[in-house]
Length: 60
Image (cartoon, rainbow, N blue to C red; front, side, top):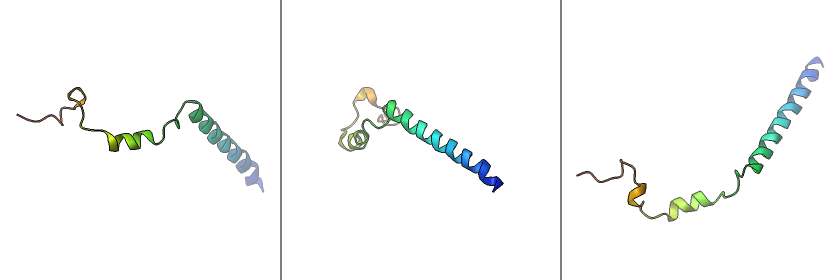
């Protein structure tokens, strides 16, 4: 029974932290465009020359 005196407040505190983290992500726009990046990677054509990284440039 003495363990419950510690475990109940700890579990309530962890639940509260999880709730605060969820609210923080909602307010900072973490879920604004969940499908955008997935569709963008499939529909994106070849990168323009100014977006290429050195590893994608053709070797001479």
